[in-house]
Amino acid sequence: MRGFLRLRGSTYYFRCRIPHDLCTEFFTGRELLKSLHTSDKTVAKDAAAEWYCRASRIFSLCRVQSLSKAKRQELVTSELFPRRKKVTSTTSSQRLKVLFDCYVSQHKVNWREKSLDEVTYSLGLAVEVIGNIPTSQLTSGVIKSYLATILQLPANHRKSPALRDLKVCDIIEMEGLTPMSRKSVCKHMQWLGAALKHSKMEHLLDGIVLPTISRNPYEERSVYAPEELQLILDNLQWAEGHPDRLWVPLIGLLQGMRLNEVCQLHVDDIALDSLPVISINGDDEKQVKNADSYRRVPIHQQLIDIGFLDFVRKVKASGETRLFHQLKLHRGAYGHYTGKWFQIFNRKYVSKDPKKVFHSLRHGFIDYLANNSDAKEHQIAWLVGHTNRKSQTTGRYTKPPTPTQLLPVMAMFDLWKVLKWEGVRGEARKSFANHGVESPSTSSGPCTS
Image 1 (cartoon, rainbow, N blue to C red):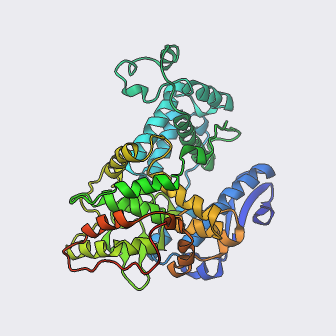
Image 2: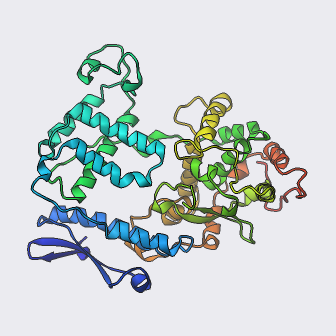
Image 3: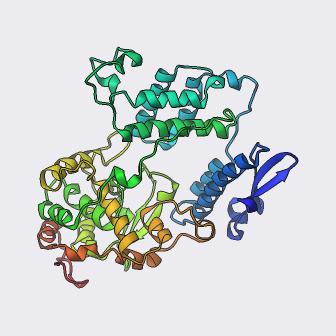
């Protein structure tokens, strides 16, 4: 971070040049200069790294033409020039709940209802266990004690009639209770860490070092083996009134998209041009996980060959706006009911492994490209909507690739060649039968192993 640090008097600043093509359109100067509010170089390096990642991400998003100019300007303003509250002498006497309420109120506009409920419950648990203490009393030791306590608590103890009215200290002394999963503990610590990190950015908390409880991401979900993918294909069936139960798993398998990204698609998000493209965006009521999730990606040729575009044309001809218009919104997301159905389908026909879920399709897509193809990490990141922050060159200075540039990367996902597609192809034909469209061609290659 040496090139991004500047010392003025006794205070360190983050400094970086604004890319030339963005200077006049979204910024008023040629460089970004932000006070890090510290004279400690080690602390300044960490803070500068945070600002570097944030600035790089916003510079990249400013070049995404599928976002309106107003939306891009809003991202610049909210992320790089946020309004800061005055720090007063009374901040150290603020209570923990006030700190958490401030965090939630400033971020809830970006969360779906389900996420808001999850954060509110998690931070409420922190206040319940730690106590609504003044922030001046919040130390690393207090947080370690909180971690030790929730490691012994059962999951959703406030939903249990037998436990909801008991004190936490009494619950953890009870025998025969199964503690919450390590994954749940990680989530609680992550939300606590996010709230405290927000407070640090507001300069309300200094000197607190959070303990970490980590879990390797690949341990949370497992990828499907080819024979399990074949079981998925063999058991998918077309059901009138539930087109999602056929097409959503196929899109997840061949595009690597998140469940809700697929379920909320609009018909107009599918470009039926010479190069068919899917646009993942936050227009209208749609939600994206984060700013890096906005992208336009080519549609996999195998998805085209089994008739996906014909299905899209059928829905478009019906006048519907949403591709899977039968799905209802649940807590801010359209993927809830499809996810519930897939879990039942998955356990019945495919795997009893709790680590194998719908998201495993996305994991498998990424894992295959990373380990069985020549795709570069930043190319995979653009394709699936991940942040590419490891490289200053590709993370900051490169423009988002076009769908044409991503097409060769998409073609590298050729795992489909070892699977048999005849059965699911027949089910796919039913989804657009009798609507004046021809059966899709099979010119792209064999569909059997």
